Amino acid sequence: MKKLALLGSADSFLLESLIKYFNNVYVQISVLSDDEHCNFYLKAKDLGIDVKYLSFEKSFEYFSSHDFDLIALCDYRNELSPDILETGKFINIHPSLLPAFKGKDAIERAFMAGVKVSGVTVHSIKANDSDEKIIAQYPVLISNLTHFDEFKSAIYDVECKLYPVVIDKLLKDEVFDFSDLISSNDCPNSCGGCGGCH
Image 1 (tube, rainbow, N blue to C red):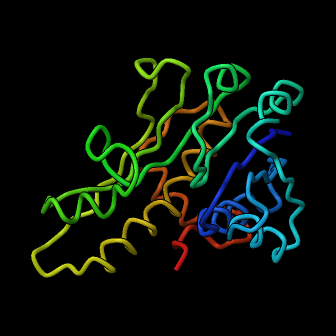
Image 2: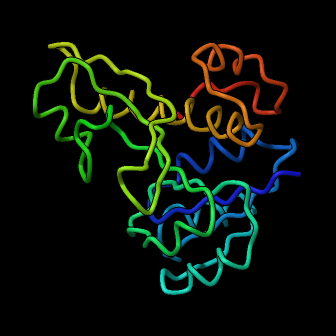
């Protein structure tokens, strides 16, 4: 049984997608949040999922004493310190094609910059930024007629499809390939495939 921690501070759409994808499979999921009032925490409660409040100050102690195979950030707003990152294998999903539009408000900044291609990146998080690796990227096209809300929705849809599949591959010690996204539509999970979060 693999052990996966989902760590979030704000939005809940990734949580729903991940819970559906890994329903009744080989993964034991722990849901953690540093904000008891955020959508991430409240949605876990609504879904009947055990969610633990984990203050940022207690993060090092918690992760040092728990042996997770993977810790996946889901719109986590705090910056994890190097000592915390040394306690396990951390990954994050970012709404741009890194290294472009790194940091906050990436979706808005990409759209306002007028780029024709943006997308989503899943990457490792290391104590030393130079050691971080891009694990997977998926593009989202922006035409002259694309409205911001359409672009934002497209980014969220890609995140919902990409993150569960990449996490699945990492937990199996396999390398992600784009064909995995196609085959995930026929996955045996009870969610019936990964058709997005909207």
